[in-house]
Image 1 (cartoon, one colour):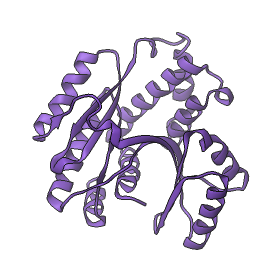
Image 2 (image 1 turned 135 degrees about the horizontal axis):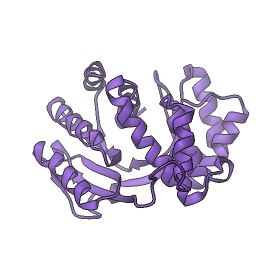
Image 3 (image 1 turned 30 degrees about the vertical axis):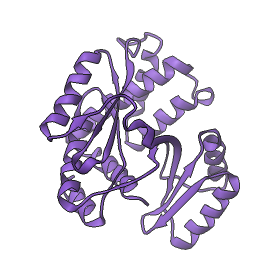
Length: 253
């Protein structure tokens, strides 16, 4: 798997820590509420909601929290996501890596100010709209933890089903899937009895930025800070991180 994909996996592991779990659950609940408001509360009819709920379950979010988040979409149980706007911010990290920040916020000025402050504190800068967004494209990303032999077999199956690309290493298999084929491939794999580690829509970089050890660590600190912001839902980068840098980062989890 690529360096940025492994970073995403480590982010998930860090999110399991007690210190971060409450904040993570708040963000997941917000995502569920907005998805339910946009597409309805029926998971079988709302793929965005199903993905949000799957992400919540993968993070061990209690079912009661998930149910409350869905009910809030209909104004049940307190304030929901009616006034939340999705806003995207762009910038450059240390070493010039592209950074894309997706926020759900009820206060655009606050969100923009906090994101800008995070960039400034790490001696980085935000960019004009469209400056780095073109580097990313929305794809389905499916990861599966399997043996090398089994991963190769599943990769060929996924390609036959319409997957665009894949990568395999000792972490398992990562599939990159066009949006229109994502649901079909996910369902087909599950019907084959395959256990998916994760299946989500992601902003995948078309090109990668290779960083040295120093700028890699500085970039990870920036990404971590952005992830901690209340309004920020997702952070994407085209930075590639070495195994050594990621192992050190993992130890800090």
